[in-house]
Amino acid sequence: MEKKTLGIIISVVIVITAVLMFISLSSEITTQKSNEKIGLVINSPTNTISLQQLDEIFTNAATSGIGRSNVYLFWNIIEPVEGEFDWSQSDIIIGLNEKNNLKVTLFFSIINGETLGPFPKWIEKPSLNEINEDELVNTLDAILSRYDIVDSIIISGATESQFRYNEQNIPVYQELFSNVYDRMKQKHPNVQIGNSFALHNVLNKDLGQIVNKLAIGDFVAFSYTPTDILNEIVKTPEDSINDLNKIFDMLPNNKIAFFEIGWSTSEFVGGYDTSQNKFIEKLFNFYRENESKIEFLTWYRLYDQTANSCVTKEQKIGDQIITLGGDSALGTSEHIIQRLNQYNCNTGIIDINQKHKLGWNEFENQIQMLN
Image 1 (cartoon, one colour):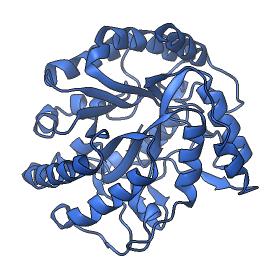
Image 2: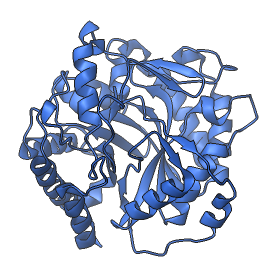
Image 3: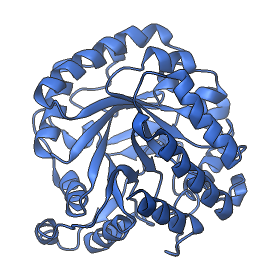
């Protein structure tokens, strides 16, 4: 979810056992009926995996009837040298999405919570007002020109955390976003562009004013966990749906997207298989009632991972080390990180033994009813 979402997005190390397999994978396009507005974050149960195994994971995920997935593509990985792009990782992941008829929501983090970037070394570490608009537009244009299945871009994630103590910088970002938005729309008019906020942070810390000031672009996206500031589940499924409905009161005139929304089954933080299952049922009822207002809804995520493997205080993305932020010293404590690990590592609808949870069956059945 939030790295603190959405802290930092889990990076999957792919051991490519046969690089040329990708050519054959791309030529076998799945024709299964799917719903382009319903997505799933497709991850692996371990951090080391072969291309063949990853192909099977995508194929299995697509059987649920989803029509999209998230791809997390960081600037320092895609353009390590100015003007020279490394497509080796993204070609594989995008290719697997294409093979399975999945549209892509692209997360390209100019802002990642309290962190800016990660940026390539050739950009160094700019402040918000030092981010070069031309360089950003050129890079996004290169990505979208290569991958036509990307139909949505989120430029900033957990945006409320960046501006909680720096509201004076909001006009700087508003101008940057608006200029980039206008230029990208000229080049790629059908791609939808927006920012994402962690709804649980917004509600827990009363940050609705930041959301309102930055409700710009084609949609306003949200991640959501039913947790308090300690990352423990304190909401019932019914409470959580009430939280989601608060978005429409906050933003009555905006298209809404759910970028990463989930429920952990870790009993350590107050989660259970049955509560995840109930939340999925109620989430799809909520979606049906508000479908015309919702751009897309993506569940976080497919697989559980081994405990304590999901979040570290310092996480490496490509050649950059990102420090897990917090709004206070409490936010970086071992106590918080332990609970965030337990929460995130158990948000899958398939467990680490590759056994379907109750949530998988509910998720699949609900999509089939939509289709």
